[in-house]
Each structure stands twice: as structure tokens, then as C-alpha cells.
Amino acid sequence: MSTAFAEMFGIRYPIALAPMGGSAGGALAAAVSNGGGLGLLGSGNGDREWLARELPLVVEGTSLPWGVGFQSWAIDSSVVEYVLGFEPRAVMLSFGDPRPFAGIVRESGATLIIQVTDLAEARQAVDEGADLIVAQGTEAGGHGARRGWSTLAFVPAVVDLVGPTPVLAAGGIADGRGVAAALALGAAGALIGTRLLATAEALADPEAKKAIVDGDGEQTERSSVLDIARGSRWPLEYTGRTLGHPFLDRWRDAEAELAADPDDVRRAYRESIARGEIPAEPVWASQAIGLIRDLPPAAELVGVLAAQAEEALGRALAG
Image (cartoon, rainbow, N blue to C red):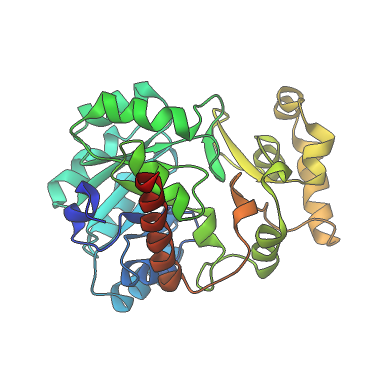
């Protein structure tokens, strides 16, 4: 399964771990790299304590290429420089303006990956010298564009726009058929989140992993309600796809009202957690969770996904 992405890093399979903030820790990133993909540590907002714990795990856990992902809206240059001191092969910037950080990454010699959710962001990624672009569709679990494209439509549009820069497809890819579809759309590989969240090494609550395994895509929705209720600083243009939640039922279609006066709902949210009525964190989940039915080791899963993709492509070509 040689593609421009796989050749760029000298990896066996065109599969990358989505750098899920706080969940894609050092053990998971190392396992994905050891399995033949590209592990990306999910540093999210660049919390130094978290990074100081997880970076050594990936450095010690693999001799193969790995990288780190950041939320551009939530970091400053100092944390990027700190991480670059551990010599990752790649740094991925998502959600927000990449310009304050792109030059630092390029100057370090690390591969610059920029995730985009619309065509304007894709053009900006090219202008900033991205070596690899991730096209994220709205099926993705966790955060993404409020008014974005579906993966099926978005990926080829980005491929056509940014070529010859290679593109990874993201959003709703949870088995090898999804990887094969990404390649058929012109992508050089797939960035996978929720499927790799449901693995032994992921830093997620066991109940959240169980909910993903037991859940179905129709039970997910994209909203800012839980960010507002949690007091999260996520910009409102990025909503989060999660499994169902009582606060979504109460405040659905009333986000503007909630954002204008959030104090009471934030208090109620904290009290509900304290009483054990709701989980401490939302269950971030892709629309593809109906395809997820187990919690395997991540390295093993990467090989399974690649084998499934080869089989799917073979069936398609056989007619």
C-alpha cells in the first residue's frame, strides 16, 4: 500500500492516528507507529504537564516515525518549540490560524501537517507551505466545522485544489473499507480517530470506550452545547460530535441563548457530574461508531485495517 504519504515517512501503511486531545497519548501513538502507521500524539491545548508525561512514552516506545498534533487556537509558540525539542517527525496544526506556528515547524525540519475543514483553509495551508494536508469531513468525532462538508465530497475537492501536496482523508473512517474509499477519492491515506480511540492503549475512560463499542452513528450529533456547559474555550465555529447527552436534549437548538448566559447551566453541569448523573467528559464519537465492536491493541488494529483496505480494493477492481 505505497502512497505519497507512506513514502514521505517510510511507513508500511497509509494510516495515521488522529491526534485526539488528551486521548492519543504516548502509548497509543507509539503503538500505531509500531503497527506500521504514523502515530500522532494528541497534545491539544499544549498542556505542559501532560506533554512532559506522554512525550517520553512515545520516544521510548518506538524507533519509528511519530508526530504531535496541536489545536492552533489554544497554543502559543513556546509549547511548539518545547515539543520540537523531542524531535518529532511531524507536527499537525488544526482548528484556527496556523500561521503563527507554521514557520517554526518548517524551520525545525519536521513535516508540517495542516488539517482543514473548508476550501479557504485548504488554500491557506498551501500558502503556509504544508507538506501534508488533512481534509476533515463533518462525520468526524470530536471537533470540526459547524457548517462543513461531508468527507465523500470534501476529500476530492481538496485533492484537486492543493495538488501535488498529498492529502489525508478524515471523518467517519472506522474500517479498512473507509481507508480504501479514501484512496479511491485521491487521498494518500487516512487519518483515523474514533476507531483508534476504541483500543487498549487509548487514554479514554473505560465507560466511554464501552459506549463507543455499544453505540451507533445515529446516536451522535454535532453541537456546541457541551462546550458551553463545560466552560470550554473552543471557538463556536467548531462544534463537537458526541454521543447523546442530557444537556444536548435540554439545550438543542438553543445554543445562542445558552452562550449569552451560561452561568446557570455550567453550575448545573458541575453539580450533575458531582452527583454521578452524567460522565465527567462527553463521549466524543464519529458517525462510523456502528462499525466498532471491539477494543483491540492498536498496533494489531493498524494491520487489520490495512488488510481490510487491500481486500476492499481488490474486490472493487475485480468487479
